[in-house]
Image (tube, helix red, strand yellow):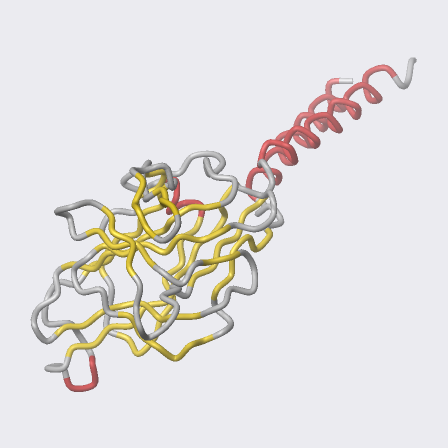
Length: 240
């Protein structure tokens, strides 16, 4: 009897470890990385935000990635920046002050629900920065649990530490193949709050992708429930 209980305990611990260590099946809830406009956007030191429309119902974010480029004209081979260049990514709810435009007003980026803090980047013709669950949990403002948005949200990027020979920006794609986007973009210079901007070059839609999974606890609870049945069978299924 003791040996059987010990084996069942080992099975439980092993299954719980497996449930918490295996990645959950994730859905792409936003994808703007297919229709390359072959245009580059240089925001300088300004924080710029892309308001996007999420697809599906999964909101436990498992990954986020975006494309950027960076050059230093004084570096042969574009090996290093002249300055200590860094980037910062922030996720916003669109619940800020209304910005007037067109036939109505538009809610600007407001509540922050994830802030990566600044991180170093390197010069590149084109590279992808990818955030995973551990990055979301350890951010300057961590993302814990589900994103507090059903549809619209704004993600922003800001580059800092550029010297006069450095240029950094994001690659432009449009239209998205999953989710939606708008042709304009948000800009925050740090002085007057957010302004809705347009560009004669066309849609300013940053190349990015998001993946999200169901609530993590649902799989775990299912396994725990199933193991409870196994315990019941082992304990009461046989008499001697």
